[in-house]
Length: 218
Image 1: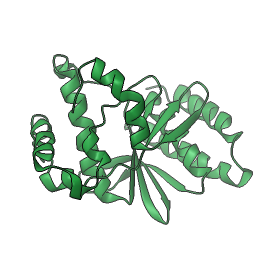
Image 2 (image 1 turned 45 degrees about the vertical axis):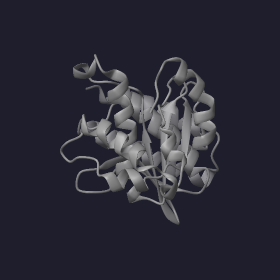
Image 3 (image 1 turned 180 degrees about the vertical axis):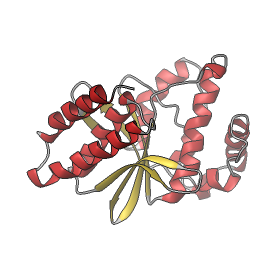
């Protein structure tokens, strides 16, 4: 653990992001930075993920949200970002990391993780978003582009069957998949320090051809 290096990286990125904030909003971003440093001291966060959280937080703060990071939303769930302006907005950041034990089924595991997050977290907020660095692709199932009333039972069950391969304690409930909602996708440019929000349909339109060429279909 290198607290000095972590803190310096957080301060450097905060200074960079502050240039695009109103003066009154800079303390809100600094609060998020202090939260992350405090969690690093407890060995709860790492710098690469924390920088992504900080960039997303800056985007939300510039739009009038109050932001907290690594917030408990249930007895078993901690969200990456919880923003509030009226209703609650949760953002989960995905980097595409796969643990070594899933080296032989990386795509299925990652797809199940994305689907499970949408199902589990979205019921705890009025808006739920995923975020990822611009160098990654998220396999978003088209079922989450449809309202619950238009989702076919067999499609919901297919997603549940995939999630059940990886999540058993607790399992992902059928109704959570049926009613899950995805508000937007944030693309994070780490080098330039900004995040761009896309609607899910726009993101799927951008990435679907690449995923289908790689035979990733869910």
